[in-house]
Image 1 (cartoon, rainbow over the protein chains, first blue to last red):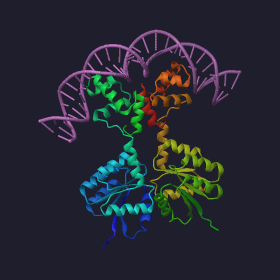
Image 2: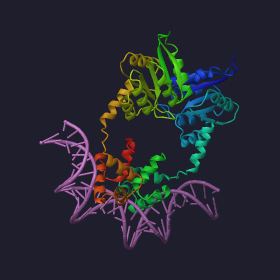
Image 3: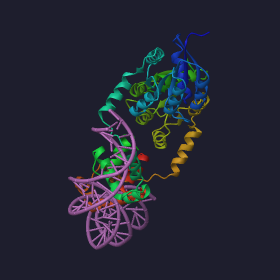
Image 4: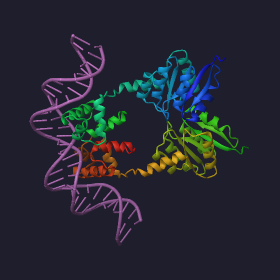
Length: 207
Length: 207
DNA sequence: ATAAATATACTTGTAAACCGGTATATTTTT
DNA sequence: AAAAATATACCGGTTTACAAGTATATTTAT
């Protein structure tokens, strides 16, 4: 019988898994029981077996970390999931939290930070590093406009080179309606032509 | 006196460094003598000391791996540099090679692949994983248009929302000239309006 | 149930972009 | 020195986009 905190690692990079295991081997209170490089294998395991904390990379080849997080959390609400990624994208962090992640780390975390994060989520708390917190704070300042479904649809058609008339034809709308959406899009991004709109939208990862 | 292959690791993620050290600890023929999380510290070390192979991450916080690679190679041409990164961007790989890198790995490499790469570059060969090779092959198929200096200038002004007249004013050109460049840009990207042009340019990392 | 957000559509006018040409001076490369 | 690439500039005409307003039906959230 094992009373240690059971940790599962999901990451498609073998060297990261090795690194995490090595860093965590210094802490007697926990043990890394299984590791997975494929998201779906981790999913299958987690449905059938118990563990305490899952360290989960966001960028998996077969399934997105966000999706996996949602599926796993739904099946086992007691599981504590710690998201990880190299790039610090606020919207991804938000999505992970929404899907049930209890904490988030950026991969340049130190061993101590990693340990603290695992300990906190195991105890039912949440953990977000200072860096993650400042990313979230910063991103909420530069208010990314909220686009409606229709607007997103039209935005991507504009980006692919369709004219107002062509878009209207595809969506069975009046060109005048499409033009209104186009105007609203430009207003939301505070630009006054389509090229700048596309640039902004891509910069803010909305395209 | 040590006859092993001396390997230096430069990566801003402690867990990746740990992972690499752990993976490489199984191979007696080499030894990881120093590791750095900051590019400039590695640079200072490499100017003053000798080593055989440098495993270098591309995404460093203080200096780009590409820049570092160029500086270090210029100072010590005998040094073998192996580039590494998580994302598989063909243009970055090409730039690294151009700046003197002898090989390139994607971070999901296995221990054996890593070892093979180090061995190869140490012996004066080059090493590019199958994955890297296919990325390079694929990217050379979808011919990215070559833009002139003027075209790049005008392209970025279009992306920032300037009209033909405004661009002409800024660059002290006739609006008719700017329009010609604009047209040539659209022709090169095979699109017929500016929004699609911007989308294409960003997709192909030219903006 | 009511308020707010979203999606729809119109008018009028102006400005800008796009198309298909042509032309030539200046660099850069071979 | 010749050829190729780049940068410059023009004409005439058509299409599309943009600006500033108004209006209303339909969803969605409170």
